[in-house]
Image (cartoon, rainbow, N blue to C red):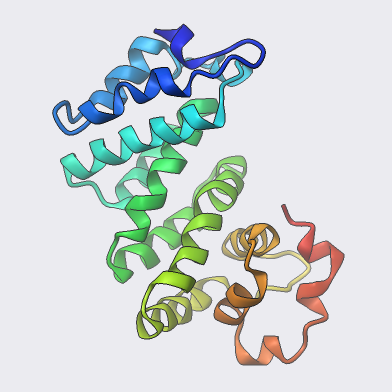
Length: 213
């Protein structure tokens, strides 16, 4: 089963793993079982190469598993903090968190952002920013109602401001990564920055800030 996930060279393996996706609902813990059988939760798995498609499909399996178990985003983040993951095991979970967060209630999403910022492992926190929040926050800005998006970003600002200190807080670092990676910078920055910060673009147009990713 491990050879279905990992690859050497350019042989695509996403189609093989996608075979399991339709069965996620029937077998709620399919992602965890698949992970154990394939051995991708082993310490050496980060040394292996795998396709981005596999990480996305594997993330869908975890998302289905968490939904079936009634887990909230903070439950998943808490487990990652207690039992750190690496390689595909981590990236799959971060991908699975994306739809879980987008479909969460605003209160749950705000709590999850705080939990992300409190994660002890700085590398995992940076990966959360780049893989998960860099997709979640732009989606909220573009697809949630104006009222809901405004309320969420207002609450998030209370966690990550001030943004432009010489030594940013972990919450601010997450925002730095998100803004440095977004494809819709202008729209997202108007949501995430306060009116006072928007009046002075020098800090957030600086190479130091935009180079966060």
